[in-house]
Image (cartoon, rainbow over all chains, first blue to last red; front, side):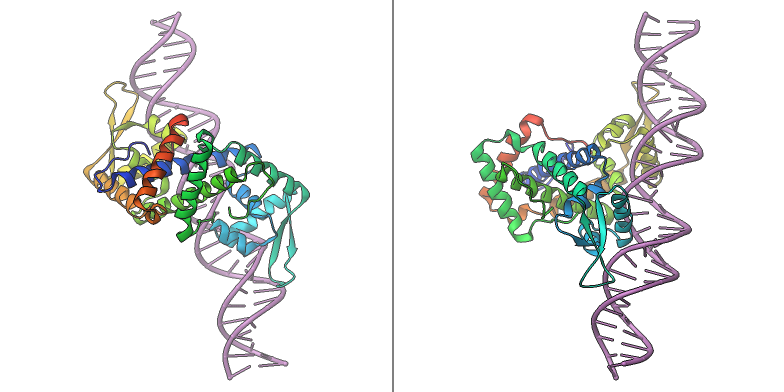
Length: 150
Length: 150
DNA sequence: GTGAATTACTTCAGTGATTGAACTGTTTTC
DNA sequence: GAAAACAGTTCAATCACTGAAGTAATTCAC
């Protein structure tokens, strides 16, 4: 998205959005690579990361912004690999909760460690710049709230 | 990515990365919605936006990080809709360049305008905070350079 | 409390983005 | 001037994802 350039009343806002898009692309690529290194597809990795606590499948579908039937397929594959298992939800016998096995926990930890370790962008900043950036991000996200889904 | 939490020596860095991921997700959703509103798929919209200048198909494939054969399909669809046309590259008769028709230009402009207009996050910030954010983004991206691809 | 409507997940067929291999024509190399 | 590399296309296959129909459990209404 280097070559956007249109006439626009707010060039500063435009550059911020452009640069944030660049951040978004870099992070997405970083996520894809990290997932692929772990032998996972992107939605598999998202699911694994989301399962710090056991979650109902419908909840996972909402988080991933996909159809419940797709979560069935993702859960099937991760269960076949031994990273999670289904358990009936004690509160609603229609529902099933997904929970990580110890292998799944390990993989999740490794995935997150790499995600943070090698995350692009912030490594360049000085300590006070990082603090300032964090403060701005908190402010910016305090209203809409971080869009956490997917 | 709300529920990440692992033990990690750098909680500030972790929160920054978490929040940047949240920004990335929000912008991706924003992009998908904007493309869909224009009747385009995500790769179609990326291609259109990338074609400020005529580009060779191989170059577009590199930009989109996909196989050349996929660019053929995308170009076919956008050409069928009348948004671009192929022209032989004057420098290499094997290659073809994609260039926007005037309808394509119009759609590209509309797309970019909406992308900037409705971009989430920055609307909350005060003027001096925006300036500070831009400065930090410039610094952070000056080394690795903005990862512009895709 | 019993039946109707709703909900959680699954199954399965279909769609659409994407890849990889085989092919045509063009350029480069030596 | 032949061989190798390259740009794009075609086509078959793959994979993520959706939508509809089905099963079982829950909730709602009366």
